[in-house]
Amino acid sequence: MIDEALSSIQAEPVTLDLLRRLHTEALNEPAYVSTDGQLASAALDRFVALDPDKCTLVYLLLRASGARHIVEAGTSFGVSTIYLALAARQNALAAQAAASRRGGGDDGGGGKVTATENEPAKADKARAHWVQTGEGLDQWIDLRVGDIRETLKTDLPEQVDFLLLDIWAFLALPAFRLVQPKMQIGATVVVDNVVAAKEEYADLLAYLDDPANGFKTSTVPYQGGLLVAVYVG
Ligand SMILES: C[S@@+](CC[C@H](N)C(=O)[O-])C[C@H]1O[C@@H](n2cnc3c(N)ncnc32)[C@H](O)[C@@H]1O
Image 1 (spheres, rainbow, N blue to C red):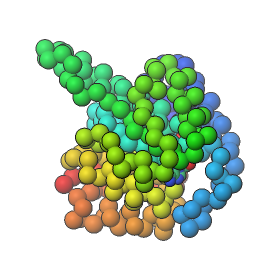
Image 2: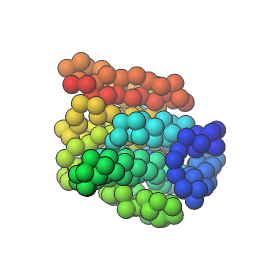
Image 3: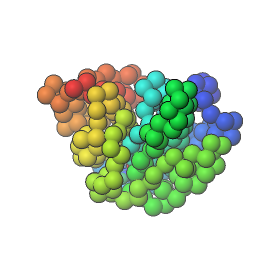
Image 4: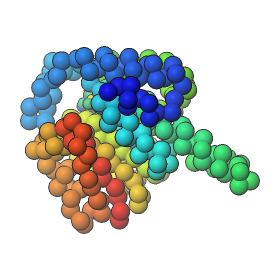
């Protein structure tokens, strides 16, 4: 499962080896129990990471859309962030190359992942993982440590192309609402576990399904259900 998923990722061998090792560790962690949208305290230091097949889909969506300004709600040990940063970097470099082919030099758009984690110890581990990547991906990540309801209140990019919601369900809608004003047509939101935690996500799902809010959605049948929502205006 891990190797098959990684075969679709464009990355240096050292980065692929790191991802293989981190996914193996995460998949070997015992499952945690979440109640009422809150996480059991025993899970606070658990190595939780988005499954490799879901990470690959996210990476390919990012590459297909050319997304460069990405927000991650819930970073943990930084595994999914590596995929987001790979795509942000590759899309930014591709946009820059296209601009210089047109004779315009730097297109000025850059690219960045705004990552968020509440637990300082997890944030430290995430940073330590990112510096081990072959591409220097730590340079492409702005990690904000603290409660996401505060850390995303200020200094978001002018435009957010993609939001990964991989956080406790009761925080998903508040995080989404902070980022939503920065979304333009085509902005994409991916949410993990929407089938398994349907009740906990009821507020977010109702919001995304309301035609007045301008999103179209589809749930991909990965484990627990992975929602893809696109802002169509
Ligand atoms: C499912 S994990 C993220 C996994 C990560 N996306 C990956 O695939 O590697 C969710 C993370 O959200 C963090 N979290 C929980 N409450 C938070 C809050 N209020 N603000 C920021 N992060 C929070 C948890 O500590 C946990 O590490």
